[in-house]
Length: 591
Image 1 (cartoon, one colour):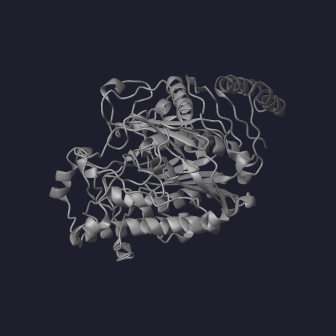
Image 2 (image 1 turned 90 degrees about the vertical axis):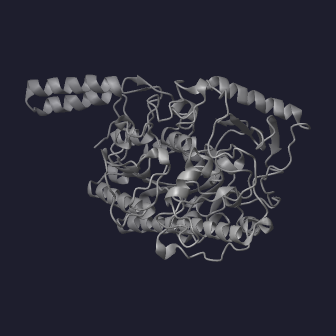
């Protein structure tokens, strides 16, 4: 049997023709055959293998996980399941995302630049001149089609368990995952929430956490709910359904770990007790050395300098050290718990005899979270009045803590800054891809630039499905900006992208362009100089030496590339300072 991809208008014409013939000839075999001939000749078709032979895809996204947090990327956190996945497949040391979560997720789902898919800025962070501008809606707009939708209409069983963060306002049902290509869905619609059953909102102005299942809002969660565990349970249920239906499956598992508030079940809460008592500078050195041994970090990489908003460990008093150390203990425990759940997914695939035919992708949505969450609207006062952040209660259900810039810098080691910036620390994240049929990738480490935008075209290519390009269901859409990595992953192409391709970013007015070994960046003071900076990432991966004044021709070239990007994608730069979590006064603080 052939499975035919029928495009929009032709689909309607052929369906009407077949209906007419069938009504006139009451099931005669001649007309049934004629109907099949019409389908074959009148429609644009895509021949696919039988459902049971098409590859399954599992996409796992961690939330605010830093570049060196995993063991297989040089970290001290115990992540045996992700390490095993990494050694069976490919680790990318040059996988790039957007600077924050929802723009990354929109690019991931569509393969389209964030300035076109609705996330030219984060929801709620509009400058006055960005309000109402197309591409800046603050939700996944309808100028794009998601690749899960294309998988769905071509016979895949599609599901999501976990964070959506593509709907604003979150209660607008048109924007929920069940309307964007998912057969089954269990999701937190907002950017995050507490990790237990009390449905603790992430901010006071959220009023409540919005969870939905298959298009219906939930009033409560199970009593034993813990985010990573429950999302895994749901994902396994959905995968089992697809196997029972004899369909290939796409499973999107979007964990909210280790996103703040940092919380973990009691049995994990003391796993790392005392591990971080020597401080963040010592831990950064350990990670760099281990990263070099693994081949993750270049040998010429120095220890990163502390950012100006971080106090040296030795300048903290005993109480500050104790709280900072405990915060990182909770963070590490959350990552280990996430890893344990990835192990459950892998065992579930094996039990269903789906392991050999399943492509697994693991990634983080951006760099580690280092912004001062207390400075978002009234969060400092709200937390003080409603949560217990005592040493004894940190990491438990009614606590509300976050890592801050100190530990985030360690998580981003060896790169500069963290989430919210287009520096390497903000947009370069861990990436693992494992597919048993591509055995040549086993243990491979690649420093080839790849982008989150490349995943949608890659998945569609692997599934044998064509993107509709500029028209879907009668509406105009943007074509994908990413490229398929299938041939590169399969060893049929040496480079992922052409060597002279300019890769550009912009969020909150912070700009960057990466071309070959060179990266130009523009950041507001005091984070940057308020003018373009230039770095050679091959010689200076930690971005310590600004070459803007000595390599002027290269800077002019990259600035021209960025200007071309801004023009092509019709960027609207903010006319006022925007962003989140910034200090009102530039001061050193650990949390």
